[in-house]
Image 1 (cartoon, rainbow, N blue to C red):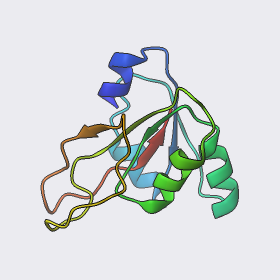
Image 2: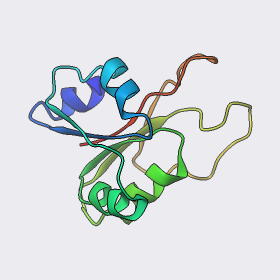
Image 3: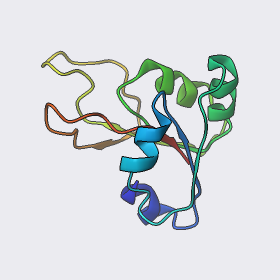
Length: 115
């Protein structure tokens, strides 16, 4: 989120998670305003996520599809530099993505954040 703030200091965050209480307690919003959305219907949440122009992904195909389907021509995506817990490579990364150092093994992944 700090990388988003550094590039877009006026961004607002929309946080989608299957554990929104955990996200609210542990996610560092880097001083950006954040809306923690209650878990809704999967299709409706995906439709809302597609409206965003920036995506901070977890290693989740759900968040991957949201950014992929988003029509914004200037969208930006931040993703963990390690998609899988083991050494398997992934073809999910796309040109222009900014990769962020993944959390050490054993720490719970952060919530998905869309900006």
